[in-house]
Length: 316
Image (cartoon, rainbow, N blue to C red; front, side, top):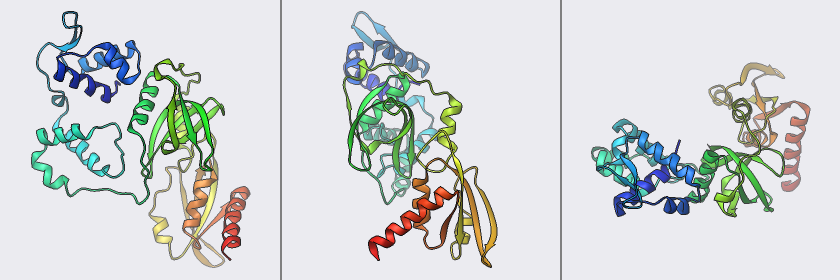
């Protein structure tokens, strides 16, 4: 599907100046002429009376058209609800505030008081570049690789060529699952750690690795947490009172298995879930200390114990 960001750009240019040239779209978004043509076809499917006019030297409308007519009121209401949820999170990074304001003025005047009473916040979020997210979305659409400058958790900066396949918001933060040409594997990149893109986007190479849907779905949904891998292992975690009721009603993973049991004559719950990387699940267990314990497999328990001992050594 064509980028809404580009479609609104085309619409605004035509409304302001009576036309928009292919060159102006290409220069604004660093895309190809063929991509512009695909966007115009997408606009026509939306009902836009857009056509190329040799007389004016660009794309124009055959008759007046309001892009907001394309969306029904229920969709817009949900869209506004989501945007209010995202006020402090940038969960909708490619939507302009001006457009949302226009939608409110035209369609949702009767809901303004209610919408002001909707908010949704996470305690821990980080800002990121909307321009960067737009480039990643365009990269996924055109299957064109991009070069990035990336800073890892240790503060080390490196240059990567990535082929983005999926954007995901996890816990209020945006990540991109991409094929990394340097490591030759699917990697999860934290978007806030992408310092910038490098080089001309329009000159990037096509994707070198084809990721089929089964492989992509396996990486996205097979294991617990944001660290996506194409292989998982089942881990066992044991929970004790007084958090058993909290654990019993929490959904950790679609493939989780929960069993009420006893350990050393005390009630407990054992949770089994698939995990591709131990980092996040270990942090989760530590956050519930001393009422949670890593049980198996042995290397998982050992990593948890190392973290526990590290805390003791540092603060004893």
